[in-house]
Image (cartoon, rainbow, N blue to C red; front, side):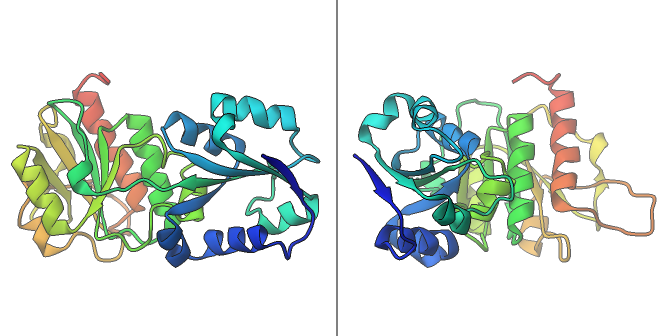
Length: 269
């Protein structure tokens, strides 16, 4: 189906705005809002089901939309919208002309499929800022981590700000969410060594062996990891710092630690 929408008062446009702004609506409707060509393409490659596409022909042609969607186009409703509607919906200053409504996937820990016997996993406890979560997902993608686990999530993974800041890496990572207790139990049951980033009672990160099944756990920048993690790790590790400040951005810390693990594994995928 291919239709045109010319009014901001159209019920579908009002629904798009709700989907973009409210996690309650995303949970209720089991779908989410995605903006951008690369993000839409990555969602298809990641096996997500696109329900609807809204595109602005002043920015992107119908033919370009068809190329992005490929064979998936046969199951998708297409709506052409005006530049005025698109600009009100769009987050970006550099517009790309395409918005998708995508079916959510469950991120239950029990459904997590680890495809290797020697996994490298990145765990983030209680991350709040969408920008940090997006950066962590980009880091995990760059390292080709086997999974990203989010313990006690403070925001839903399909928040548009997370999707945007991750540059679509929400779709390229193997993601699961759960409580700290459940994730610790999961890792322990799989025989995965747990290394928690912490300042206290910890050893320098580069002294440890990450060549065996490994989970690297990072906490919030202000409070760090909770005691439940710190008391259940194989080893607590720290990044030596020479400056005045004793903490760094959580995504930066995650990058340093996971790429040390990749170095020890000779960067083998």
